[in-house]
Image (cartoon, rainbow, N blue to C red; front, side):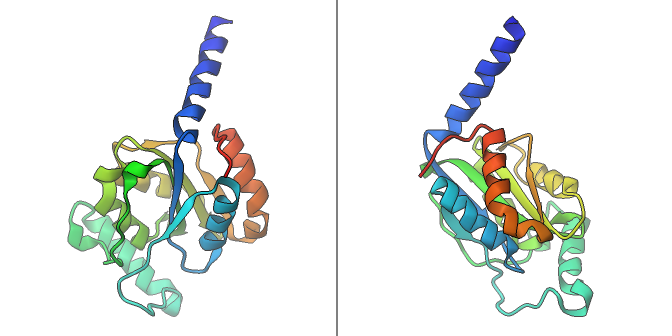
Length: 192
């Protein structure tokens, strides 16, 4: 009984720790699925949204059976500790001290986190240190364990929630229900 009470109290303190302040959702969306999910998160939580964009405009990641995206992921895999391995993104300035909870939204590319989002997290790992972090991933069918490993590698001192939200591309229309359920499951209580 004591163990149950302690576990319940620990869960309660986790919910309060990131529901007291502001929420930020940082996302990258190639096909638009994650952007729709981000709008759902904003409606549910009042989160501020920040979109990660590649520096070079007009890249068609879907061309040639997604060869560009595959090449970007391969470059990161070969040398994940070299900043030159990551594709450049548009500069983003965020005062992370204003946020208690940061949700990262990304599609899955070849069982990994999308390359532009990896760049953002690589560049901002220090600012995300100690932050409560949630992960929402969209993919056509593949599981998201590779994306979760990328998040842990890129933000080793971030406080990632133990449960990520995986929304398959075919489930995007169900995002309001899926996001709401996930937020409840992880103990998020803030409303806009």
